[in-house]
Length: 382
Ligand code: COI
Image 1 (tube, rainbow, N blue to C red):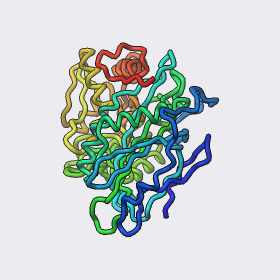
Image 2: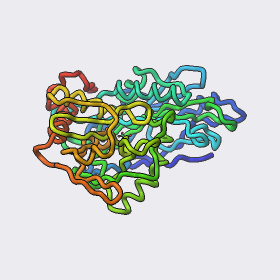
Image 3: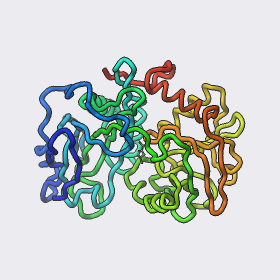
């Protein structure tokens, strides 16, 4: 057996069996689900003695996770909250051998009155369903996804940071856990949600990013999986990120793989450029992830009177933008201070009076309940 190493800080880790029934009997694995928690919703209290100022974007294990399984031709059912801990996989699990897996990322925020808000969880649920179709996997319904995320948040509510100190990042996974040897869809799937309190994604904190335009490695190709949140999109960019970071850059901006001419996205987030009253971002035609933050920023910007274009953006255009910024669930809305392409380095306007700052403040206000949520994006969970 291969043990996926997870950690538990507050509780001793437990091992759970997922998939891996012998001789193709994938559903025997259902009987080896982790011990369910007896009451639901569960929680170990509402506060945590933790130094919230030390939070970054590292994994901080929390108390509970959610797990639900199904066979290839069936529907997900009987999901449950369990203690957070290690999971156990067959060496022949589809996700380990053929990368059949998707992930999502969304956040829960604590309001000033202590209540908790999820931001647009239905969008993540829908995106997982689109991705599951592309990756030949069954998927939880939107209702199951949102319910799982709510239960995971409530169970871990003491790990939702106080207002202004970060958020609880929820990481839903959909993975092929059944054993498979020939290249084919896995016979069994696991939907799992775990959580970690987080704050700034980049080591720069909220300081502007310095991006490097990658000419050698591509992030996605036409007809590939760049437009869904497949786990297989992420390991291939690690080399480019590592190289860029070793040269002092924050992250990498990828170009289209056909002409190496249009900008696509950054390793973990979408990109926007600002010129006058016009905000532009690459259109999502299959090689760019349709980010939930991207979509929200487009809607907020239009509502605030900006003209927003979704279209192909030649890298040359990026050089005469006034501002550039990135958006993503983990990243939030991050200003870009400079972009370097080969030997050319361009700097952008950043700081208090920028479009980026205006859109960021509006978004965070909605997410944390301090600005009226006219669009009905937030889901109050307790
Ligand atoms: C997110 O923004 O939620 C992501 O999934 C990006 C990930 C690389 C941290």
